[in-house]
Length: 219
Image (cartoon, rainbow, N blue to C red):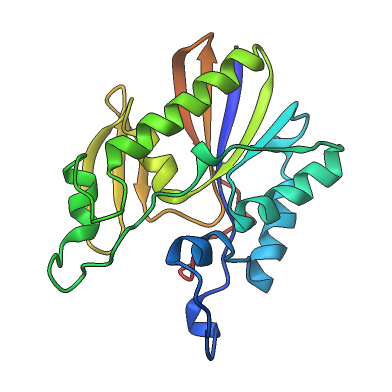
């Protein structure tokens, strides 16, 4: 069996903490450069010491700074290197249209093909994420792998195997796997799902929760 831990990055530095931002960089580049907050760094270090995440064989991360900053503590403690794969990147938002589509947050879960101009749909994100996971599985048979990625990327991938029971405009997500509720809350930062595979066949999905990483609203 191969065990893959899908790990959402820790708490990021919020735009509300930036007084001014004079740059000609695209929104995509700005999003890629978002760093962890001070609390995010603390929580990433706590995560790296959790017993469940010891004896990892390989680490992968998206191209974004905040995932690599989250992964670095685990890599340092276990003498591992990060493998960067941009297929693990967060969903590209595209041109904001909040005023025209007020239910965009729930719609992206209810309609797998919904997207904004220049953005990605649920199914597009899921397909690239699944391609990356398949390649990871082929290269790491019977190993324990940590994959540091993002909230939308993780939940959209899980919808390949899970049923969407409910999604609210406030971000409360309910998912079931094989008729069992496996997730019923807002996603945390960090958040960890353990996926167990036999070759490329998924055998189980489990939400791994840690008592010392309580839910944080500012994610």
